Image (cartoon, rainbow, N blue to C red; front, side, top):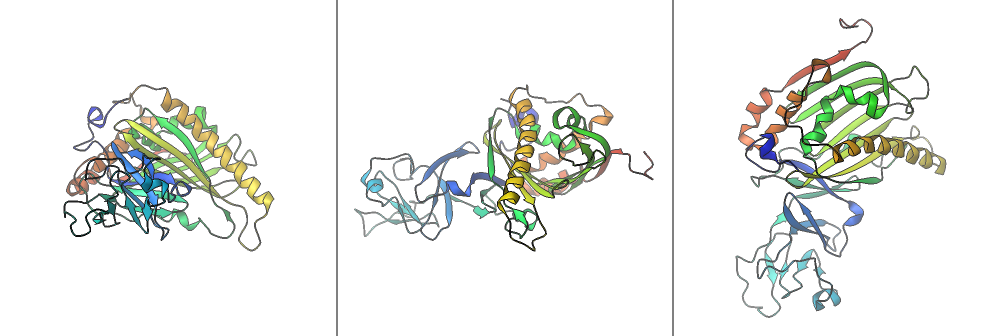
Amino acid sequence: MATTKEYGFGEFDFPRGWFMIAPATDATSTPTSMRYFGMDLVMYRGESGTVYVTDAYCPHMGAHLAKNTTSYIVLDGEHVEGDSIRCPFHGWRFGPDGQCNHIPYSEDFIPKAAKLKFHHVVESAGIIWMWHDPEGLEPEWELPNFGGHYGEPGWVEWKVDFMGDLNVHGCEILDNMADLGHFVPIHGAKDFTYFANEFMGHIVHQYYSAGHRTLTAEAEDQLVLDTWYEGPGFLQSEMAGTFDSFIMIANTPIEDGVSRAWHALMVKVHDGSRETTDEDRANALAYQEASRLAFAQDVEIWANKRPCFNPLAIPKDGPYGKVRQWYKQFFNPREKAPELQKRSDGLVVTMDKRPGSKAA
């Protein structure tokens, strides 16, 4: 396990951005323990349906708010009341604003310091997302809408594939954005025509056009992808192939140098003018499974590699250094971001064999 300081990314151990913390189905009225960004957290769904994430320990005497099955608070169904959560130790209740709003044995006095930290979370596209910021600031950019495809007619919504907890820093996952060389041995790419990266503020794109051993119907067909990160927490990709699809790959720090990974894929099975059939759903699931297996090839590499602090890069590898320079902005105070972005912003073309290009 290698840490942020060993890579030299910046002042903070954990980056700023939106991160996946759970599939939405994991959020219920039973508080759930979780750990991310080196913090013990608790997630629960209030009676309104809203999902909340808090620090795990009660400010009164330090009891864990979720790890209990025997307290009468839990047994009597009082653990979550409305959108508030009760501590199973003494029954102190905390509202979504973080303030304690009820102490069973002290109706006339509640200390102002009795406050629990609630984190900024959003439920979207069947997933719970959390904004993490070491400076405690509000989100710097909005959570994207995932191409507008979730719930769109003609598209089969993704299921979320848990890919494991990996002893790898998030930067080694993001290295893939620049890594032209791994696509042939790891992912079965062939006949590349274009590969480039574009850095734009907090966003980095990968533009890709190549054949594929299994995901294209005809030998001459090309997979055309626009793949990007909006911040360091998750990849999105619009892919044109046998089916148009939209990929999401998330990586979220558990500890400094330990990442949790998920994969999901939405598939366009028709133009939206008819009902989606069981056959459509089966085709979409098969396509998602092919994508999951492709990502699992990356995961196997990450799970068994040593840290790479300084890649021994050659020109045709792709701009690893630019990706890591772009990545630094999220580990430093927000006020430094514009200057850090200037060092990476721009287009880098690693391969261009398109007809009429100067490199063809």
